[in-house]
Image (cartoon, rainbow, N blue to C red; front, side, top):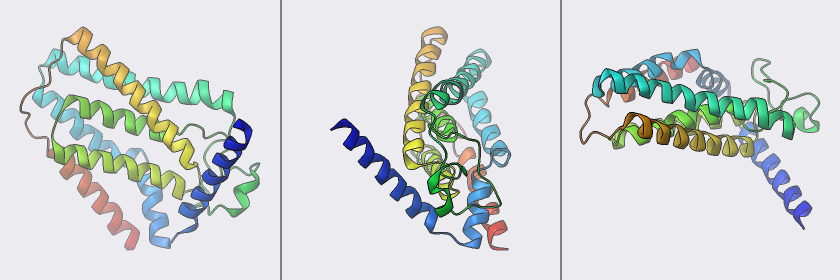
Length: 219
């Protein structure tokens, strides 16, 4: 029965991946490829660091930066160095995967060999959950959660991750952020501020970045 359940789960994962990847357009190819990048989000990361430094004492802000780094390292290394080699699930875009012939590839990008879990999802959601623990500002939380969801969608759109890879990656990011934040609170005695300043800055910076990508995609 367990085998039948897993088989059904894999089939549904394949179908969901092909549905997402099967819809494509030239502008969307450009936009999703850019959205899935890393360097393009440096301004957003810098703006998040700014609000941390702006609202916390420098000692606490330093400890917070270390905790964020720990979140990313845990999420990335557990996913990439431990789970991926153990599970060995090929990316849908990998040429050794029978499904690869049905996958739309953008700019020849196929990623590495294994894709379970998604480190993009783990790292992105790790950062998002950590920030959500730090501050309570609805506009910021809605934006960064939306950003993480679209990042995950872009990975399926590009054909380099199954939805299941992304879901497990997001859960790994949640676990890593929760552990790092708990450790940060225990060691740094952090208490969430009742009011925080300039939390709108990452929303503006991220929104401008996305707007620039859209302009680039349509031009």
